Length: 156
Length: 289
Image (cartoon, rainbow over all chains, first blue to last red; front, side, top):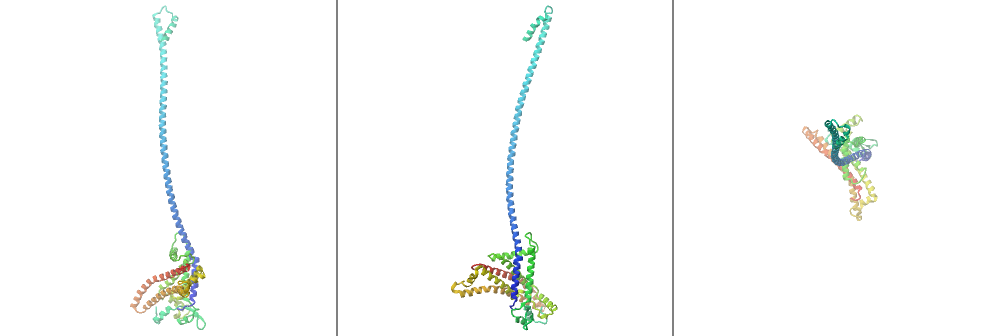
């Protein structure tokens, strides 16, 4: 238990070990610990950012959905309006067409009636002429009385 | 274990004697064969066992942590890195707790002190005769020495040279940082102008000088005293083993009890040495305390 040069040896060994530790052991491990700390902090920040972005995206999605709904409603109401318009238009068209058909039919009927009248007139004229010929079979000249008869027919 | 041929006091003395290398009276260099020869060697001799144990322990410590540091990764740690990180985190936290300045030295210093001292103290938990018997075997069979002259103190921290060596190392750092931080004038002023002002310089110097000197002395003696006493108790318990079956079994119980208690002491002493070092260096860094 004498104090001797071991004390100097110890101081040297102590200094060497501390220097070694300070140079080769402590810094790399501390650097790794710091790096991990930073990584974790970054990860947490990224997660926070991600959550924030998700919130924003959700909000935007909601907005888009809202807009889409409004647009859809507008389109639907437009379509309804257009449909109504089309129905109204076709109703009008139908009316016009009906009127037109009616008018043309009426015209045709009238024409037909006129023709029938004309035919009837000529027939009546012939019949009257025949009757008159039968009544006045002798002395009556066809030619002399045709003018008279035509005048008669024209008056019918 | 005490053999039949030596008495208890011889056994104790044998265990408390370092293997000392130095210059004999006749001028030749060699190992001391007994305590008297070791004492006669004077200051310029060296305790081979203490040096060997501390160097081996320090080398193992540095090798282990260096091997971790070489393949350290910031990702998920595994195995040895887990353990190393746990230790380093613990030391880093306690350094930050008591050291307010910024220094690249203090944390590695604290780390080295804590683990090195812890390993030295841990040697106390080895069976008390294991390493000395191995040393005796190697010494007598390989080097042809007298078996009774092969001393081997396993626990380096029971050698005051070791504890004083470390304490003086710390003290040198305290002086260095005191002068670096406050300047030579500031340091001398701190030693002489407190606490009573400039009219009581001798009294101040006496108080502050004692305060300063007591730092390394208390560091070294606290560790040495605790470990020496613990080692002594292990030796005394070991003597019981050769005193009959009843004493031996009682000694076995005591041995286990003391060893378990000693786990606390060796850790605590290493931690105290480290913490006080950090505190002293913190005081050296501060202007006024």
